[in-house]
Image 1 (spheres, rainbow over the protein chains, first blue to last red):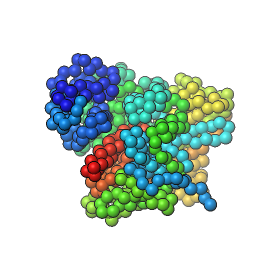
Image 2: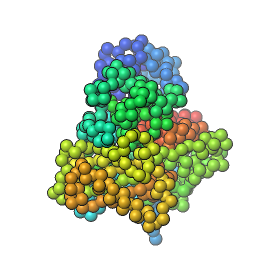
Image 3: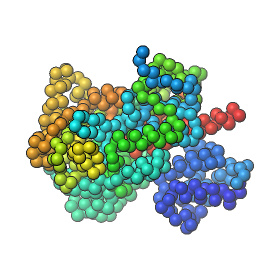
Image 4: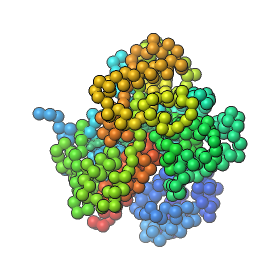
Length: 85
Length: 477
Ligand SMILES: Cc1cc2nc3c(=O)[nH]c(=O)nc-3n(C[C@H](O)[C@H](O)[C@H](O)COP(=O)(O)OP(=O)(O)OC[C@H]3O[C@@H](n4cnc5c(N)ncnc54)[C@H](O)[C@@H]3O)c2cc1C
């Protein structure tokens, strides 16, 4: 998957999680927490969904890398490079 | 021949969950939904653990642990259970405090508390905001050295009344004290303050029934009257459990039972590192409870204005020790009206709860124990009289439960109502590092207790298990 496809995939997961937020306005360089009503369970859900849908394993110590859309896509790019969209 | 509660159980499962408390059922449900074969074993004759109820003749039904939980339950139930379960969650709007320092009714959320603290307690608004933001910002990775007592001292020095308003409900919600790490308070308090106190419309029996159905639909093989005797470990890995005399294999075992029972009785101390054992031995259990269950006669009602949840106390000052003492001066009354707690005869039920010390009850002779129970019922009725006039004439059934009752039904050591103190969480999380495939998902660490805390902990552990099983599958293939 390309970074653009990964972004779409993450956005799709977020839509299920942050149902009350407007994701159209999301700024990729700003932390999710500052723009959306996300708590730590929501972050865990992102991790679980990524594993379920794409079989990507994200160890707990890497959770901070999921801070913003930008950092998430950057972190996932090598991990998801071989997956076809 | 006795009934075989394991009839047709398979010899191998991906996952075995020991205990059907809310944490255990949530882990089981998520893993089954992810496609694993899951066996859920419960020693009692019904599912739910402390999320339970009991019936008495004449259509009486009493809930044990349905006094209130934070709004977060809606999200957790929707995501990890079903929309249908989440839809049954409704707010309890009448939260009352009545003690020698103040009497008030609140919706128990941030807005209302800000108004109260500002207008009735004369606290500066900026200070209140600072406190709420600080509490909300607290998380797991924070410095755990500051205690809840110190937190209050920092924001509201010398204000016993403010501390009482902020702390009393949380002591009931999770047994924490002023000496516990402040983050255990901050997290739970902020969870409640986000929107208020909520309940499950229809009662605990309805919730557990729906969860049971949901698990069935997702393929969980759940069994009651199945007491796990041991978790068997081979070469540092989980191998199987022994239940009702039979051995069943699994790649992962999740215990929803008491943490120290899991380590010392089910697995056995010899299977762990010395340092880990030292830590595990030092884990303190949380406090326990007494309750009195009362039902009103058919046709008798309690005014809705009496409230849903009433924190009542006759004690002049506030101290968390006092809340535990057998000289009970403080109790929480939960009022169950027939619209939220339907029952065939449209009765109203009242449950009074107090926190308690195990020793105060376990050391009594049989006669003294029975006598103390009677006393507990009588004193509770006396206290209730203030809020429900002539209650003795209106009530047709009243009975008590003690720490020994809780211990008997849930097998929690010393009847612990809310798992362990904070340090238990580290030990619980440390289990899989000791033995591959062994997990604990049950109330611990104060923050992972209560209905919401244990459900969320069940999710966290399901995530760990899924991760392990996927890794194992890919290394095999
Ligand atoms: C009196 C009281 C009032 C409460 N009020 C509230 C409230 O208002 N709001 C709130 O959010 N929380 C409340 N709580 C706390 C809440 O009920 C608990 O934190 C939560 O239900 C615990 O869930 P759990 O997953 O840890 O498992 P538990 O409910 O502790 O269940 C563990 C299960 O494991 C089973 N088990 C144990 N050993 C074995 C074995 N060897 N083999 C098979 N099965 C075994 C037990 O039978 C039990 O079913 C209250 C608790 C009490 C006691």
